[in-house]
Length: 280
Image 1: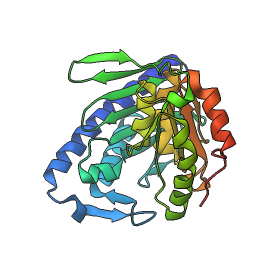
Image 2 (image 1 turned 60 degrees about the horizontal axis):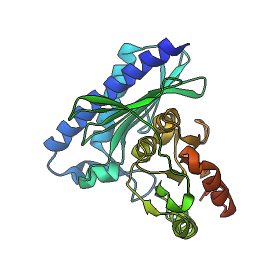
Image 3 (image 1 turned 90 degrees about the vertical axis):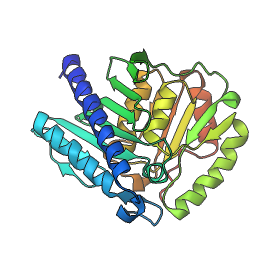
């Protein structure tokens, strides 16, 4: 499959993400008390709402209609095998806690992979409508609905780690979270500052947009990072991510940075043992 196919998949991902975001906003407005429609998954602080499930069902059904031979991996349990060689990787709401609390930092994330390699991705901030997309070899861009503009994405020109702004996230596991907090004490003194915004997919898009310089997080699943890592890489960031088949329970790191700080940042993170899996 060539670039024409990648761009076709990009268009499908972008349109599906946009339609899903509209449904999520409408459903959130309809439900007066979201907590009544919320359960937990891996721990008491890992919520899933009825809207997550409805959004994933909508995405799965639409992709099935458009490309019936493709496979799908969804955060909320949807899974179908691929006949075509294309597998969609879907997070219907990345940043569910923010969604619950009404914080405007949650997203729909949709990626397509061929033979284990992500070839296209779309991430949309549900609240703002800003849509980030990429296709392998074609660069990355964002669509700004307020101005009806499409803008090319480019990672920052940061060159000094001590002046870099870092985004990260934390696990739902109490034990892993305590280890992440310990690691943070070795990161924070060495950089400009830390941001924890609550959506891995959007963090990676902010890296692509030059709004942060470094991103790292342990224990992500493929639906958390598949679209975002491609968008960041196509914007010029350097990305090291776990394989798509590696579960978040392995505790491996997803690490990405602007090209001017990547080598020094990676060396520092290596020195503080950040590349060791946090598998608890």
